Image 1 (spheres, rainbow, N blue to C red):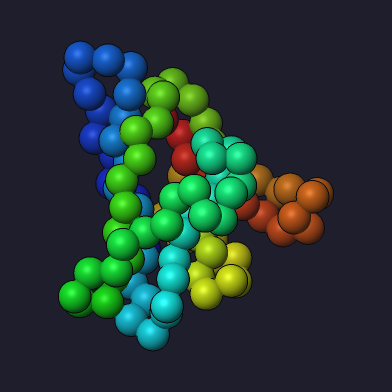
Image 2 (image 1 turned 180 degrees about the vertical axis):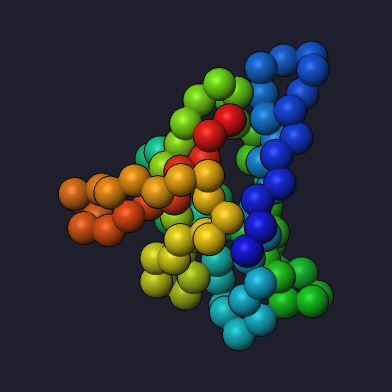
Length: 98
């Protein structure tokens, strides 16, 4: 899994690209505080090499909790900036600091 951050000079936005290698998976989505944890809001596109990829424009100078949903199972990114316990989920979420 990989997270790539590209800060824009023209506005306070960071383009964040999420990449999830999951050749066997049928669907991968990224959910988090930026999309109200909606599993259908940010589905990643499957590439020919089996990696799922997608880019979001997120406000800079902010922090977001997030996870991936791979075929219905929640998964953390090992490259997250940090982890935060979430009582509602009963698990840790990855944290993205921009």
